[in-house]
Image (tube, rainbow, N blue to C red; front, side, top):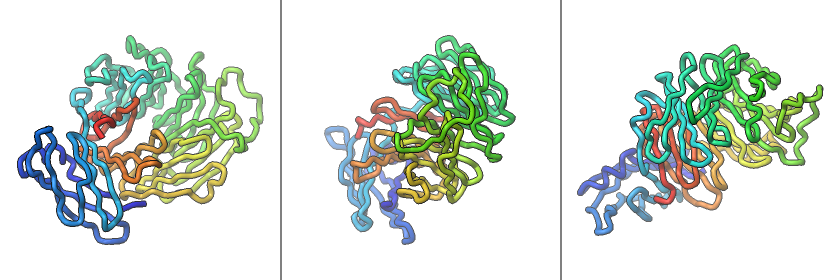
Amino acid sequence: MAAPLRIQSDWAQALRKDEGEAWLSCHPPGKPSLYGSLTSQGIGLDGIPEVTASEGFIVNEINKKSIHISCPKENTSSKFLAPYTTFSRIHTKSITCLDISSGGGLGVSSSSDGSMKIWQASNGELRRGLEGHVFDVNCCRFFPSGLVVLSGGMDAQLKIWSAEDASCVVTFKGHKGGILDTAIVDRGRNVVSGSRDGTARLWDCGRSACLGVIADCGSSINGVAVGAADNSINLGSPEQTPSEREVGTEAKMLLLAREDKKLQCLGLQSRQPVFLFIGSDAFNCCTFLSRFLLLAGTQDGNIYQLDVRSPTVPIQVIHRSGAPVLSLLSFRDGFIASQGDGSCFIIQQDLDYVIELTEADCDPVYKVATWEKQIYTCCRDGLVRRYQLSDL
């Protein structure tokens, strides 16, 4: 993995000042870090600063919201992208989760102040508060329709809400500990939850009933993901005939990111094990990249890429810092990751540089959501940031 480059979090504002400066650094693994700076020589007629880099760094390209820097000695380069806009009025405290509706019109987010809110994705204007969980809401997401929200809380309840009138239409009870993550199966007649109680459960939304405990692993389940499986993967057969209320579970894999350093994969319908992988530390999050590729992130900063068909040895382990990997999201032909040190980056196969989403200054970025060319992040500093990939 190329040596990570870092930049002062408010570089875009700093370089708009005359003779403004911003620091830069490069961190090759196992070698001393390199430090440098960027200096603005003034603003050009096009409104873009003219910027020079100190020795060892090169400014390849700059525009209003992005700057492409390389460090030739380490043969590494990054494009740093500043937010297009920032929403500060949605929540007052740390934002733990967010999602954007399938049409891109609405956002939903939850905060450590106990609130969960629906807002206009274009301008952050509040639309509704979703009230009903006791204690913190840990996770929230839209169903594929974009009209309904699924949330899980520390009160061990899973709830379904109407995004249109904020009513809670279903409450699922059965978990004995806080719900840490959820996944929606197909169009959403069934959903999956992972909890601190060590179980993953499958639920029937129409009858608000539990269809079964899919896994009971004795360790907190921090992240869950559901994905369609390649035909070559043996998912096993169910021991009992599945309920006719199970919809869309066949040929699907369930991935569990566990606190006990284990990443577990099983057949969603069969409940049979596919693999168990042991990592370097607690697994916080996981996602599928394809019908056989997946990613999982750990508390000590490792991102494992595995192939379900031969999961014993990772395809690669990406390590950009020792900060916890907090979220992973499949994106185009790559992925977006966020970490506990405020870093949030995009790695794509066809790009020889990393895109870094900047401005969160050492505050954890808990979750990332995308809609077309827009990327939304939520952070401990209480801000939702929206980045525009067209600004690259």
